[in-house]
Image 1: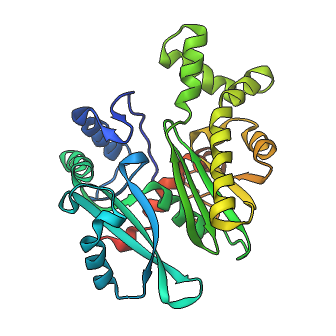
Image 2: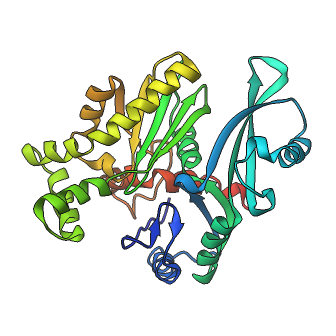
Length: 318
């Protein structure tokens, strides 16, 4: 890695995965491309939240072209949209179903064209073009596969706690077996602080950042405000274990802005009764040590996971 840059979006530019202020987003993207000194034109990006549907289903074994036609013909069963012509979808064929060569497991991802096109248009207006539209939960998986080597018996939960969305992707035997998006994240802490202290959102965000970098009562209170998210993650794990696996989660890799909160790994471990560590997307990724210090790499690691996962798809550009 030779370049890394990030910009913060004002509240309301994107809400619940939908672009609410096209011009503001375009301006931010232009600034991002400039600050990163990106001279190319191709962009790999990802959808997040409820705007993208992810479903795992079983099919009889067939070629991918036939499977695509079959999904379109039977769209009402597999894609919860009124008209398949208004939808972009893709799929990934997993392992054989129950070791039966006549059956296969398939993960389907789909989103309305108006949503995918809104992001593509914003990136185009900023001077680039989208070559791959991924899903952030799968970008987490790509970063995991590149950097970690757990045994086939391990069931690992990738948990990315962002500003407004928490992504969960559970991996077993190097395959995604469960995904879920929780529509809550670090902004919920800021909002609680804003109401309790009767201050602006921006002021509350500063207090959150200062408190999360410290220790003692301030840090503990901030972690306490995340309890509803922890409980929702726990419910997701319980559902997975009871209906999908029958086995417990063996390890959690935490990423996202909230992963940098002091003490969050220990609190997560105590609440969810599972080994927890901070996701390191640069474990096996080389970076230019003349440009980035080891301390900076550690600092940006948790928030860079999705970006690293997307960058690993560079070879798939068309």
